[in-house]
Amino acid sequence: MSQPFKLPDFDDVLAAEMRVAGVARETPVLTHPALDAAAGAEVLVKAECLQVTGSFKIRGAINRLAQIPARDRAAGVVAFSSGNHAQGVARAARLLGMPALIVMPSDAPQVKVDGVLADGGEVRLYDRNSESREAISAELAAKRGAIVVPSFDDADIIAGQGTLGLEFARQAAAIGKPLDYLVCCAGGGGLISGVALAFERLSTKTQIWAAEPEGHDDWARSLAVGEIVANAPGTRSFCDAILTPKPGNLTFPLGKRLLTGGLTVSDAEVRSAMRHAFRHLKIVAEPGGAAALAGVLKGVPEGWRGGRVGVVVTGGNVDANLFAGVLSTED
Image (cartoon, rainbow, N blue to C red; front, side, top):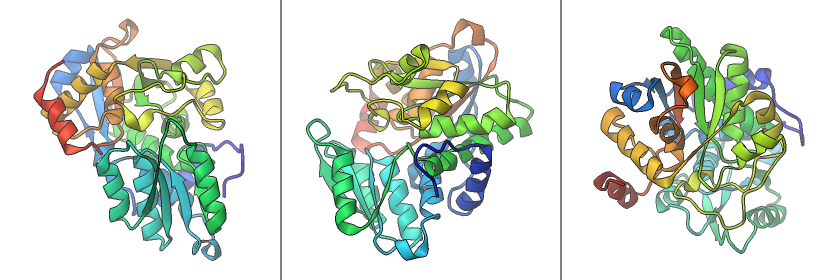
């Protein structure tokens, strides 16, 4: 079980792979000439939107919950999330026979709330502008004797998410196309730091870059100065899944060591990436899940041109009406 401020390592990611097996599926790597032309580089897309529960979050959730001793499972777990971690925890808890209570913002996409409820989870809504999800979760967990499962700043969560990196590095190597660059969206950083641990060992020459919404680029700014920098309160974006206030106390030390830098994307660029993903790859990407693709399709940095770029489309849990609106309009 993870301890406070214990940083995970590559061996933890390998151990997580054993727990994740049979629950998460290996998602495909997709390509299309239209994406290469737009980016100015060869683009390989890891379609994690096709994952169980519609995002990568099941990887970390099952790795974390599977390590809870049987004697402690009856009280269940409490998690806080804008939606994808919520669904991952609800599914993992159901598979392990545990109750799950999820604290979600009142503006969470309904498709994500419905996903939690469909897996037997209980939902407690809160106002993200006036209430603290951490405080609410801690209070509810204390009343129930439940275990709080963080969405990103936890060694077991990070290691579980890192299994995506193991897959992607091996898939690229298997087709003789190791990546020069890998772009992954970053919220709290559980995924990108776990993926970076895997690539550090399996694809040592690959540069890892974060992708974030404009005005919510705490990772890019934190990496630039070498310390955690928070976003301004109340900053909003179309990318609901990756709007965390700042990098985590566990994820940032890993990112500081393993990441190269950050790219920022506008809401319009994200919508364009969602349309490209649907038209050319036939996949549904939610806004936050399309951020990395947006960062590449707007044109890669000059030094990347002609190189090989991996992109993670991290989730596909988007409300149908919103998605239809994105597809039917051009910015």
